[in-house]
Image 1 (cartoon, rainbow, N blue to C red):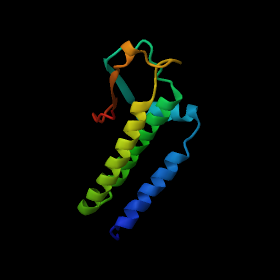
Image 2: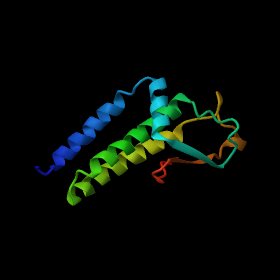
Image 3: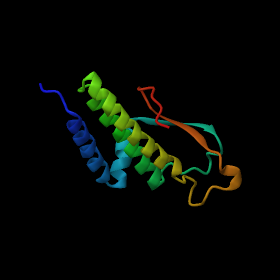
Length: 133
């Protein structure tokens, strides 16, 4: 088996980004999110007005979930040196998708009021113990 070059790693990431650009329909994304076993734990703020079915929230969380699946699948196939490169690229993508998730307004049909501005939640995948946000 030949070793992957830096170009091969970039090709992997490019193919992943192409997959993310071709998002499925919202119902399919919701189904896939349930299969990803995400759990959300409120930490701070008023969650009574939160809409976790918000389209932007679902899209951002789906992208993070797909990124995590991609990472778990590909990292085991790489050499130690390749992993270093891959992890740097992964971290950049992860932070970009995390920022996208942080910008989503998940308050039901209205902007967050001044008293509702602080909202903190922990999003993690059941069974992995890794936090997404």
